[in-house]
Length: 306
Image: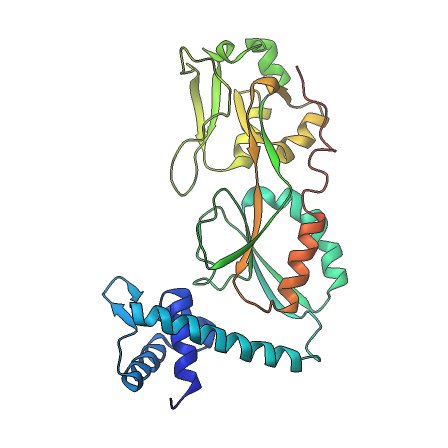
């Protein structure tokens, strides 16, 4: 085999599923990565990938070869890491993608992180769309829901819960629901997920029959801040995360309803691209956010109403 570079290009292409993604990691153009893989296939006399205009898949031979080569590169990484004792200070640009709604949680804790690690430059992207961390060169992301991408490593953060809330003025005018069926005829402020366009379901435990509520939706949006503001203004009932409702509840601008009838756990995760050796800047951010984020989610909330 003439070039370790060809071997590396093959392994990274297999890891990330495309020449483009492998090129981003290796600092090469997609065509250069493709030529390296083709050269390796000629050296071996075997096809390693099945190529089409829309996909790139390992052959059976490629899958076996990838497993062996990955172990070889991991051993090389270990050897390099053992010699890199001087590269221990977290430094450089750190790109972080987070949901818009989490800025209430992040902004209070980030100043201390910046004081601890002054050589790290934080670049935050507050965005609710689903992104490819590798394609968009994101170092760390915070996401909720399912985690289907096997190329990513995740760490679970402390859970949160969803609440049904209304302004005191709305409840005075329309009455306070005592059970889910009392919601019939009430005005609903609804959230629509930005990516799927699917409407958020209120996480209520309903009796078997009938199974559908008859609220009247008067306002729909794909931003939780806008939803919260509309609910605070007394225009209807809305569903939002506990950490977003915490301050207006404490200030008397919102009240929770039907807490005993909700089944509404939520979970955020920290995600980053898979690597045996995390860069110092990624490691310290992951550890710091794991320790500080959502640490007071439940303790700081007022007691649930009946």
